[in-house]
Image (tube, rainbow, N blue to C red):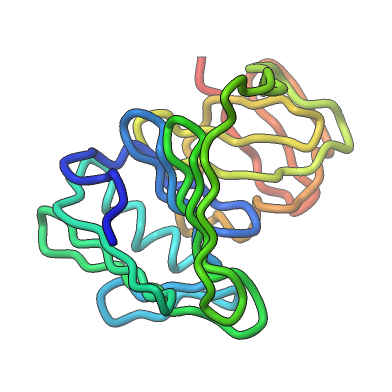
Length: 193
């Protein structure tokens, strides 16, 4: 079965508790575990997964299909293949269309299809602003718009070197100025103006 991602360009890769690939138009696919090339990406090496998936930014999705047993396969215009198998203990992957429709591979491989809401609720916006001291980094976005999002619903435009992502995610803010944010790990995030 197909998902509506053919000829869509990858715009961002996001890392929070899952790794998500975002496409032009707003559709996303989130993974708890997947294979890219010959590398298995799971909870133990999600920062390596971020580095590998970041190379997809700008690429076009040539095909994407899933089986009733839960396997998902995505092929990109440079030949990169991303695959996800079902998992026994947790959801393996989740597709969310730009209309809010969702396809989820549940634990054990069952597929659940949910239509988008007819009257979608207003989302709580993430505000581009400096975070408060004590806020935690909850998401790193790499791509057309590189951002760092915080637990206080703020976000700053910032490019995190992929080799430092593990020092950033889930760290708390220790100090804030207009030019930089210092985290409890000692990493300093330069705020892009």
